[in-house]
Amino acid sequence: MDVNIKHAGKTLAVVLDVEQPPSAFKNAVYQATGVPVERMKIMVKGGVLKDDSDWKKIGPKPGQTFMVIGAAGELPKPPEKPITFLEDMEDQELAEALAIPSGLKKYGLVAVMDVELTIHSLGNTCYMNATIQALRVIPPMQAALNTTEASGSLIPQLRDLYSSMLKTTDSITPLTFLQALRQALPQFAEQSRGGVGYAQQDAEEAFSQIVNCLRPVTDASDANKRFVEQWMMAEGDASLEPPTFSTEKILKLECHISITTNYMATGIVHSLQTTLTKRSPALGHEASYVQTTRVTRLPSFLTVHMVRFAWRADVGRKAKIMRKVKFPTTYDALEITSDELKARLMPVNRRLVEIDKGRAERRKIRLRKRGLVGGGDTAAMDVDDQGEPEDVIRAKEREEIEGLVDPAIKADIGASWSGLYDLVAIVTHKGAAADSGHYIGFAKKSAFHDPTYLDPNAKVDTKTLDTLEADEDWYKFDDDKVSVFLKEKLGTLDGGGEDSAAYVLVYRSRVV
Image (cartoon, rainbow, N blue to C red; front, side):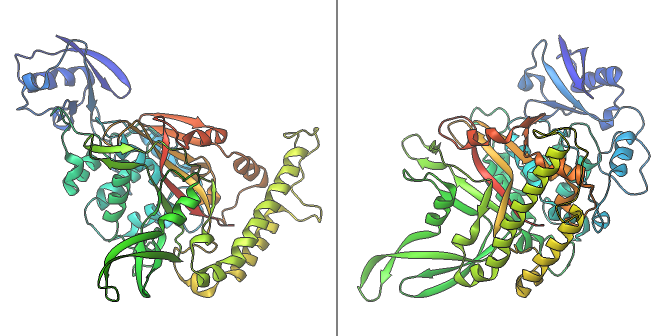
């Protein structure tokens, strides 16, 4: 029968004889693509085509398209510095030519990432693809992966995956990482109900489990610290009546959704108050107690889980809570902190708000002078009314903030200095149930284009910086399709139906 194969962006026609073993088909693919059989992977229903695969179980159909993975001809000679999955040397030269902020080169990070990079779906893997794209906005994670000596489950595979994503402009097929994920966490190897292929999985569970696998990874700046605990985990004190206290680590804030929940912030506050039932020594029987948690440490990257799925016994599965819940692009976490932490963060928190407002006003004036915002053709002037250049003003602002930060918080690697956060990534779910539907990743464009996102001290000319900061749009990562998502459309992700609704949100502590 006549079938198609897709390789390196091209679709080719080949003949498949189901009476012949798979090795014969592989040879036909080799003749069409030049990919040696020993380096070839052909994706079929249920995984990768093997020499002993049964065509009857695979059930190929005329006109069907098979994805072929592998480099044609001889492999390129390895560069001086090992690079994973590098297939085009021009891409490597392009990546190396990008500016690298001071202090980040040793961690293997570049200032501008290739946002057009897409990830192929390998059959119900959108949950993993969306998670991988969302985690890309956390530079300290990639720096830690590049320097750690830890080698636990998923650590080397995730490091190699992100390394390859930085070194190529081609689409990525994360087969090695997917296999490692399913081996380390068997729940993601569950077969579909029909027994054909793998089942859809929960993106929030994938996000949390992948991050948990990174717990042994050491921090890039201090090998005695653990990256996840320093940069992604909050701490809280839980108090229970009668007065008992316990300290807990918090990997994510949960926003439970009830019939009265309209805003993420209020949902988080209510979720930090839970009712427990236990035996009362005074009453001599079971009684209800209210447990209240107050956050005593905030990380630089804060994850929020919109709890949109609840188990329904009548249908035997997790059903989606459709209610519309608004989430902010700027989140002030001081309302959930302890009084002591709030007092320490307040000076920086309030000053950052003022600084951000001042920067926006100065940028608006400069853009108007350049004729970009309702002005004439006046030559650009990158100075304020007092004649100070923008970079000088910002250097003074950073120095001022350094002086306001609480010494203990400053010494705590990865801790938020202010409790003031900006939304930088979202994973959404489209559909009615957790084990079906579709997951999509979103990330703010500045996380990929703005060098100051990686290093606030990066040298960027004022005109370029104005253009970068004025662009508040996002990227939408829908498996192998990437598109620009306007900031005005973020409100469509609030929920309210089966369409895409925010499920996991990643916030970054604001810096100057």
